[in-house]
Length: 554
Image (cartoon, rainbow, N blue to C red; front, side):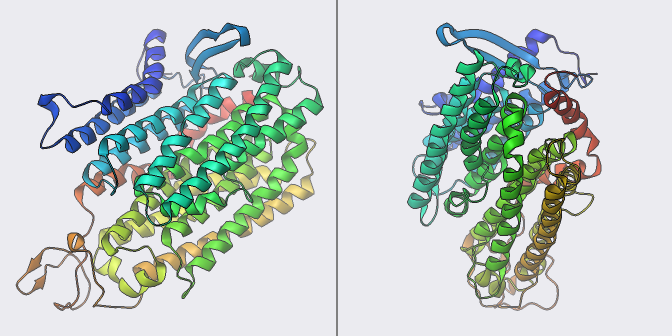
C-alpha cells in the first residue's frame, strides 16, 4: 500500500535528490546571490536560501515516504546501485526501508525547522553564508548515512558531519566553545579510526562491502573471531557517536557551547547515526560477535541511564549552578542508554523499542533544546539557580505559552504514557525481560530493573526542572534582555496572561514569537501523534527488524 503511486525511477530520483541537494545548496550558498534574490541585504538572501533548500529536501522526503510501499517495509526501495571503485567493489548503493525511512524524514524535518528558526534568530558569529553552507553540508552527510548501503560510503557519510559540526560549535557557540569543539572532534575522530579498521576487516574477509548482501549472509561468511574483533572495533566508533557511557564526556560540553540549532541537530540527528550503525551493520552482519558483547553493551547502557539521571539531579539541585542546556545533554546520555539496551537484547521487541526511542528522542529533545535556547535568549543565561530566582512563577505567569510548552516537553521526556517518549522505553524494557536465545535472562532482567529505576530518576529531575524554572520564587527586579520584554505602556508592561497583581517594576517576558511557534509546533504535534498512534511507526520498523534479525529471511 502506498499513499500515492510513484514510479520506481521517480523514487530513485527523490532519494538521490534528498542526499545530493543539500550539498549542491551548500555550494550555491557560498556564491553571490543573483540581484533579484538579494532581498534587503545579502545575509537575508542566504538565510532564505537555506530555508528554501531544506524545505525542498523535506518536501522530497515526505513525497518519498508517501510513495513508499508500506505493505513491504522490509524491502529496500528507491534503490540506486552504480559501480564506483571496481577494484574494491565499492558501489554507490542507495536505498531505504522501514528502519531508515523514519530517520530520513526526521532529519529533513529538524534541519528545515533549524533553518527556519535561524532565518529569524541567527546565532552571533561570522558570515551567515558559511553558517548556511555548514548546516547544509551537515544535512547532506546525515541523510547520506541513513540512505547508503555500502560500508565505505557509510563511513564517508559518517565522517562528513564532523567538520561542519566542529565549526558550528567553534565559531557560533557560546562560552568555552573552542575547547568543546576540539573535544568533540578528537573523540569522534579517534572512534572513527577504529571503526574504519573494523569495516575494512568485514569487507575484506567477506569479499564485499555491500550492506544488503552482508545482512543476507548474516555472518555465515565470517568466523566468530573475526566477528568479535569487528564488533569491538566498529562498536567503539559507534558508541562514541551515540554516545555510550563512559565515552560520553564530549557531549555535555558540546551541547552547552553549541548554538541552539547546533544543539538541536546534535541531539536530534547526529546521536542517531551511532545507534543506526548498530542496527544496520552489527546486528545482521556480525550476530555472533554481537551476542558475545551484548551483555557488556547492556551493562554500559543501564549504567548510562542511571549515571545520566544522577548527573541531571545533581545539576538540578539548588545551589549547584547547573546549566539547563548541560542538564538536557546529560538526559540524552540516559535516553540513548535505553536505545542501546534495546539493541543489546537482540530481539524484535527490543530493537523496535530502540528505533522508536530514537525517533522520540529526536522530537522531544530537539524541542527541549529549542525551548532552552529561547529561555537563554530572553534571560541571557541558562543557569538554573539564576533562572529559578529570576523567573519564579514567571514562565507560567510572564510567558504562559512558553512555560506550558516547556512543561509539556519535560513530561514527554520523562516518558508520560500517551506521548512519544513512553513507547520506546517500555518496549526496550520488555525486550530486556526476554532477551534473545543465548543471552543470560537473569542478567538482562537485572538490567531491566535498573533501567526501570532510571525512569523514576528521569521523572524526578524533569519535575524538579519544571518546578524550579516555571514555579520558583518571585523576583521582580531581574534584568531582562530588552528584545524579549513585552511591549510597554505608560502604566507598565502590557498583560500577557500573568496571574495576580502586577507592578511597573516587574518586567513582562515576551511569550512565544510566531517564528518560534512555526519551528516548535511540528515537534510538539508529532510527539503527541507518535504517542497516541505508535503503530504508524512500528508498522514500518517491525517487518524490517524481523527480516534483519532473521538474516534477510522474511
